[in-house]
Length: 298
Image (cartoon, rainbow, N blue to C red):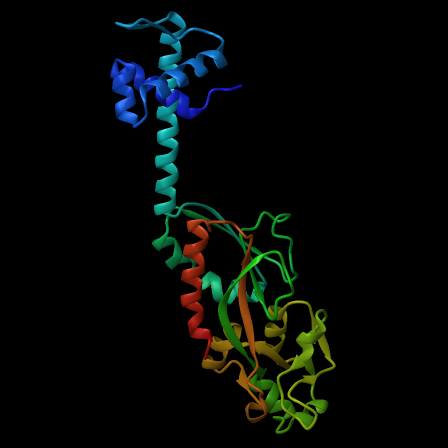
C-alpha cells in the first residue's frame, strides 16, 4: 500500500509541532488517532520513522529523509492547488474553436482582437470545417453549429439565432430583373448547397406552405462560396444575416422577396463535452461571443 497525502500531512505536523498531543490539537484529532496514523504509515513504508518514548521522540535517519521529502511533496501540492485556483480565476490556456467558414470569418474573426485584449492568457486556435466534426478526434473545445441540432451526447448552449435573407447583387437584378413573387424564381439562377438538403429549403411563404425547395443552378458546399458567387452577380442566394449584414448595409447585396419571407431564424449553438465544471476559458468565450451575436438577432 502507498502512503496517502493526509498521512504525510499528519507526519509532518507531528514533527513540526514537536509532539503527538500538540499535533492532535492542531489538526482536530485525538492523540490516539494520530498515533495510529503514524503506525500505519510506518507499516506501509516498512521502516521506523520516529523512535517514540513516553518523554520524547526522535527521527530515525529514514525519518529525517522522509520528513524532508514529505515536506517538499506537500509544498508542491500546495503550489499546484494555488496555480489551478489561479487558472480558474484568470482564464488561460489553449482554446480550440471549430466553426463553418462563414461563421468563422464573419462572426468570430472580427472580434478576435477585442477578445485577446480582454483575455491575453488564452491562446486561440481557430479551425474551419463546413461539415459536422468529432470534437474528440479533432481536439476541439467548442464547435459552433448553425441550424437544428441532432441528438447528441454533447452539451449545447444557445448563442441566439440569425434570420435568413434572399439576396442578389444589384448588377444581377439589373441584368435579369427583380422577382416579385416566389414563382418568379423559376426564371432565375439560384445558388444552393451541395449537401444537407434542408439548406435548399428557403423560408418563403407560398400557397403550399412556408418553405420553398429550390433546384440550384449553381451549387457549393460552403455558404461563403455562395456569398462570393452572389457578390459576383452569378445568381440569387439564401444566406444568413450574420454573414451578409455588412454587404446589405454597403449595398453590395440586396434583400428581395421580403414580403414573402416566413421569418425563419437559424438557431446558433455552441457544443462541447459535458464536463462537471466548464473550464473558465470556455465559459469566457461563450459569454463573449453570445453578447456579440446579439447584433445579428435583428
